[in-house]
Length: 333
Image 1 (cartoon, rainbow, N blue to C red):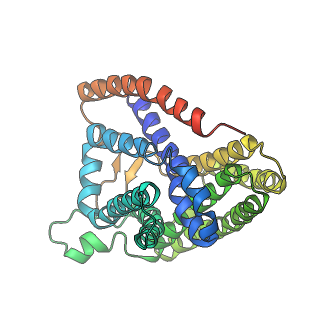
Image 2 (image 1 turned 45 degrees about the vertical axis):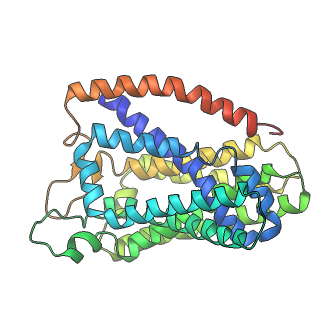
Image 3 (image 1 turned 45 degrees about the horizontal axis):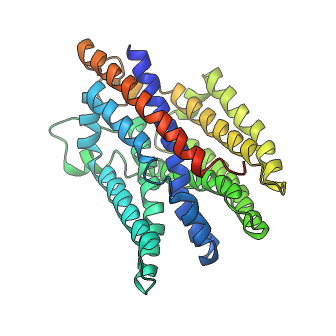
């Protein structure tokens, strides 16, 4: 029962990274692509941008109900980066809605675009920071700790900031790759393919920097990674997929299904390799017992009811979600 709940939690996080990442990454790509591509990007994300948050809501509900100690700890200690994530989501959604559906095209449109682009950077940046703070091991529950030590030090450091930039680059990479199949204009397609290649390289460089900065901050992430054959295999898989993605990006074809499958598999193995070396720890605590899926889960009766709710919810949500994407996203693939 606990295993199934953990699998659903991991799957929801993966889907939000892929789909929500492509959504946020669209604002990142628009920042560099220019105003001419604004129409294509808006058209691409308009039908599905709000639906992608289903997976984030699902992950939050699972943590709140199934692992209340973890939810409470994150909400308390990391309330500053989490608040900035929420502000980014709200501002981005409002800006996109007003920009895309406003009946009048006036000077206010440029302000909507500014907020849309800015929040597209802010949200993934602080999502990455929050994730890094959970594994760095500087979170403390010492009641005698000062404000900075308790609420700032766990996330305000070079490792967490590097993870934030890695998340921004990863989301841009996902979005640029997906956008290749969203236009029939060859010039636009070449531009998105170029961005995809650039973000692929920057993501790989920032991924290396994450390991370096972890060592700088005293977190032996490299040793943990090298001790895990599964994580090493996942890294090799990521590297082997890169030439295939590069090949599909160079093809002048609207058949982008294989390209999207490749990027989906690549992101999946990145997350599997990353979380494999962390499992079962959810929060690494400084000077105390780490919070794991085994010592923080809710009572068995609660988990049983949660699992029933998750199964019923997924049965209702997944078909509708697939139909939504089938209508708006599968044409021409």
